[in-house]
Image 1 (cartoon, rainbow, N blue to C red):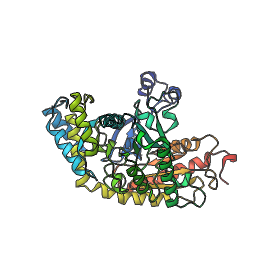
Image 2 (tube, rainbow, N blue to C red):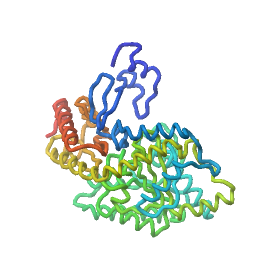
Image 3 (cartoon, rainbow, N blue to C red):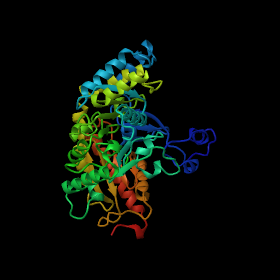
Image 4 (cartoon, rainbow, N blue to C red):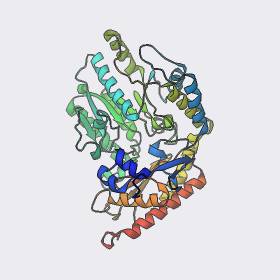
Length: 461
């Protein structure tokens, strides 16, 4: 932290309230200021290079200097910098993007609706689900099922569907009747000797038992990330999604696939729903939709969802929901070009290939004293950190080991993210073999430095 009163760091401390940051600690620690980006790398305002191992926030598919996205934004801004999509208005980019997304969907979808962030898209999905229940004459059908460790955003409704303690503490939760199931993390949650398939069967039974106890007629939808992201990159066990969907279908409960992190190649196929043969009624998308060059998000709904909503809006006279920037023309133009590049360059295939290289490299560190579990799929992975492998525990304070390792990774020029005592990896889809190897080397350096810093009493046995 600099003592210069007019430095960027000092001005940031003076004027900026940061998201997901300890505001009190920030007064002393100050910010890491990122000045520019190139490919998978970013550079701070002192010129230090980092591999952006999280693609920003799970999102910059094309890296940090894709000129074609800049060109798409500039050309559209010169032609039509803004128009809205309220009251029967539209424009070319939003029509083209709607058609593109519906055509890409892994299962038949009917309509696309545009928002500005994943959180807003989740809120919109929740509102539309409740609207639909009322349209069907089922006002009691409003309860929502999520999983522990789920992340479904931070808006006032989305935060209620998220199942992470920091998103709830000291905030009021306004959505009633949110039902939380066991996280599908076999390494952490399975019983001794329980196979992945048996674990999945147990979780499906938990789901069905909860539905029956609450009353199927009261439950509207199940929200689930194909792979849980911010909850620790939780990869579902074998047969999990097959068994969960069978239960939901049995009791006429909608399935919402939160593809905000998984969508557009992250899991090694175009969508997480493709990877796990999920057949959602609603798909929520953001992040890699525009590579986060501009705020973009959307949801797609099938006819089962759309038709009652259409009829109800006809009865009322409007669908009273939307945002000033819903389907913004510049955002839509950038998203279209982004998707075109992902397809042209086979970045979904690259994610599968480079993801395998990344996971193999992480697995090679399994004997390291701090590595408990390596998990992942496609180009998203996590390493669970421990000091006691047999008991699967870390330091006495939860998250302390994750924070220590993450700090050493940043010092080594690798930006990761600590989620409790797991560190995540989600680099841009453009990453090359040599850059994966460089990431792994920097990770090993950070791990070793963290190990050397542990007090003797906390050292792994």
